Amino acid sequence: MISRGERAVSYAVLAFFTLLALTPVVGILSTAFSDPDGLATGFALPDGLRWDNFTEAWTRGHFGRYLGSSLLVAAVVVSVSAVLSILAGYAFGTMRFRGATPLFALFLVGLTLPAEAVVVPLYHDMRWLGLTDTYWALIAPQTAQSLAFGTFWMRAHFRTSPRSLAEAARLDGAGSWTVLWRVLLPGARPAVTTMLVLTFMWTWNEFLLALVMVSDEAHRTVPLGLAFFQGQHAQDNALLAAGAVLVALPVVIVYVLLQRRFVDGMLSGAVKE
Image 1 (cartoon, one colour):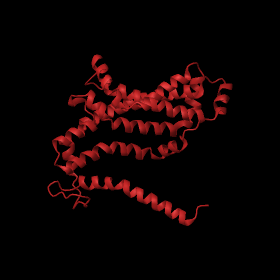
Image 2 (cartoon, rainbow, N blue to C red):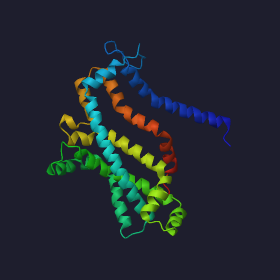
Image 3 (cartoon, rainbow, N blue to C red):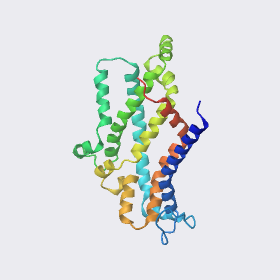
Image 4 (cartoon, helix red, strand yellow):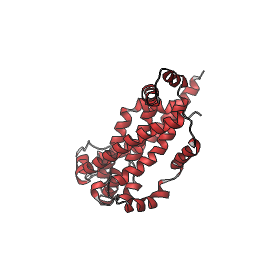
């Protein structure tokens, strides 16, 4: 049993770190709603809610165009990497075939290599293929990066799934595809949701790849667009904060909508071997 003192200490620690995490968020929001002409430094509360800061940042920063590019890239990356990760994780987690161990180790290399180590040769490959300044230069590399994590994540889940379910389905004449899509995958929804949210977040926030692969404004994503917007309005703190809120808002919305399944997937997805 947990004593009242231990519970109070736990709540106090959680409250402290919650306050620590929310402080910069409150600072950004207060700056975004402040008067650009009379902006004070620090975390002073604004005199009123200046919604026109968001309208002006949206218009002057061309965030509508950048959001469209980011949504397109994120939708394709998340969809393709999710399907491939489920298939690969199912194969590595439930099947035994020659070369499975070294092949899975090759996937793990994608989790250990930083993007900075491969971005230069990747750029030359994309330029040789004529894919720079296109969405494919952003989609293909990020799909490969997400596939490494997704395969590792889904393999861990399928390895901990009850084998009796798959064996019972096979005794009833179900094939591998039926076992995956109708037996195992419905129970894997929390794990899949967690993978989708993390992949979306990483894809949405990707900056280095967009900076290297894209030079024209038509294919800029929101992190890159925010960086250029910052360079043009370095002194307009209210507009910069409003632009940062606009960039972060889709990730917040996705997390809030999928929060329950995301937490369930994180708790049930503690890797067990």
